[in-house]
Length: 323
Ligand SMILES: NC(=O)c1ccc[n+]([C@@H]2O[C@H](COP(=O)([O-])OP(=O)(O)OC[C@H]3O[C@@H](n4cnc5c(N)ncnc54)[C@H](O)[C@@H]3O)[C@@H](O)[C@H]2O)c1
Ligand SMILES: O=C(O)CC[C@@H](O)C(=O)O
Image: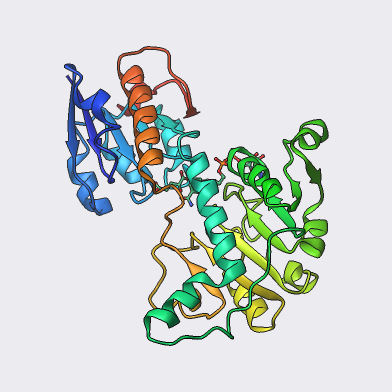
């Protein structure tokens, strides 16, 4: 019998393949601290997480039977991949299931920014009928800069075209030919910063993308730009952004993700009148959560049964001396 621990809220519908399997026993225990997880992980063959559980080297060391860690979503930055590789633990993710959902959240944020929707809502429900403070802008004829043209970035670009926006973007892995077919003009980060009216980031957080947009980029930024981050906190330097908002360089910003989650109660993003924030909800739709749970459950069960699988983020020969 394979033992699977689900340590984050993952769709029960999506987990059915595991819960109904005769050779699998599933325990769903969420909200555990690192120490609590270390104390219970030993018997489990598989661990399933979303983004809340930080799967550290210490947890993997305690999980001596762990063969696979499944991430119900895209980003695996909450999993110590080096530790997993060195222990021969396979990490799989579910990269496709939340693409459209996160793209739609990005658009919701872009439109909310363009029309000050959260700020206007707050005033209206407070009893104020303020029709003067919220003059917005159209998306039509605006330039959208997309940093990172992978699954989500491309979906955003397609929808932006339908809104009459001109899309420019950068991605080291997107060929000019494919960009042309998608109606995207490839540009450098500097060109995007200097010309875009709206800018949205869709890269992973890596050493290269950490603070990709920071002080020097804000110095040359097109005045009045609006910025969206539904990818990862830390790609845009938070302190520099606050300064740029105060100086009027940036007209508004909408962030779903933070350098530290959840942010401290006194985080400046939470009080800034030009900021719109959501608590890492990019992937939070019924559809996406079912998709990613179905996908990752299937890969996990295949790995446990030694069957072919896809979506491996790490894979290595298990070092028997560590088990
Ligand atoms: N807010 C949420 O809930 C949520 C939901 C899903 C995904 N995400 C995040 O969104 C991001 C994008 O997801 P995706 O599924 O599109 O991933 P993806 O891997 O399909 O696309 C990422 C793209 O970024 C590009 N890239 C990497 N470094 C770059 C750089 N320095 N400059 C420009 N481009 C660069 C890659 O080449 C790739 O094409 C990830 O960080 C993911 O974790 C967040
Ligand atoms: O699990 C979530 O809700 C967040 C998922 C998202 O950050 C991802 O990278 O897929």
